[in-house]
Image (cartoon, rainbow, N blue to C red; front, side):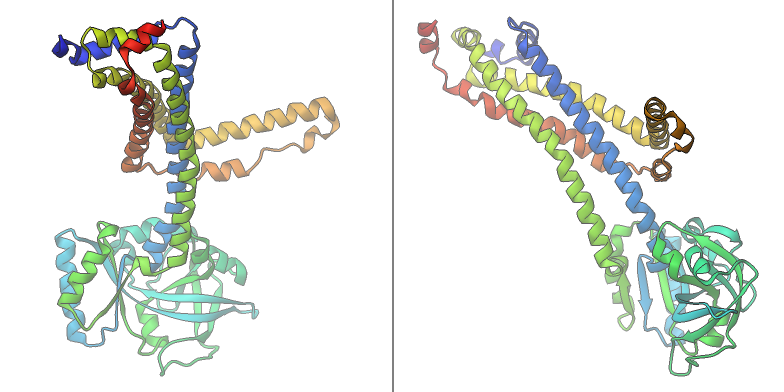
Length: 435
């Protein structure tokens, strides 16, 4: 008898009966609200984090692909060691540990146009074939006008905000009036004139406002003996520390740094922002779990006769408790799975969602103004910020989606388990005596 009551289909059957048979009708409403809360929580958290991931990825990708790389190698002066490093990195590319690497030089400059307008800039000298060697660089280098053409010496590519600050266009000239570098670099000169061949825009405003690119031949001419830097991009950005240790074993005299060391405060701010947003939305699950906890305690009290009857027929306390835990699991599952599907659907179509919201806001505003002050309707326009949000690509991270869904289900199961502990303390004789 005891073995029959421990059989899982039996627990499923009784749990289903408890969920469908409700004399007062309140339990069914509570169940639906709990499932709806879990569905809303899972959907909201997936959409919000996907948009946040896409928003942050615009910054992070631009910084890594155009500025910091995953690993940088500096202080390599010996020509033989440079050749060894190039061979080492080439082999790493062939082994697919490294995606790409380039050599570059960098200096800071006060840049002026022909009318004397000034702006500070970071001048980075890269190989002429950088677009061929580095696919990530090419992807993030969104050309607004002109092209990324640094074949000729004294050709320069400017960030869009830097070009705007100087008031220059493609074909205009700029001068590197003041230039940092090694001891043999001339600090101030009016003869470092470059022709603007292209203007680019990426996802990070600081790069657009401060970066300019020239070729390495120009750097050798103007930067003096400024040291060469190797920018390395890895297949997995999280393996940067491992690669750094392996590289330093092979080249102990070279100085290395990883992308986490650059813009540390900025990356930290992004991480805190995401964590706080995550905690705020997780509060939805906590509220739902509390609701399930209270409803299960009430349900156990209302079903004490049935519980006592099952116990008198031979069911052990753990099996009876599993009836209610299983019911909570089904409630959570019925909410989490639709929430998962809706969250993924909205995330994949986030642009359409924001465009629709822009239209809805516009027409509500238009109708309101038409009713209250019809003469002002010609001044009503769509809110352009919705279209700014629509251009943010959602980035779905599978691990986060799985964690969100599992957390939504697990929180309800734990709440139910804690609420039904009173089943283990219930005495059959006292229940039957009271009834």
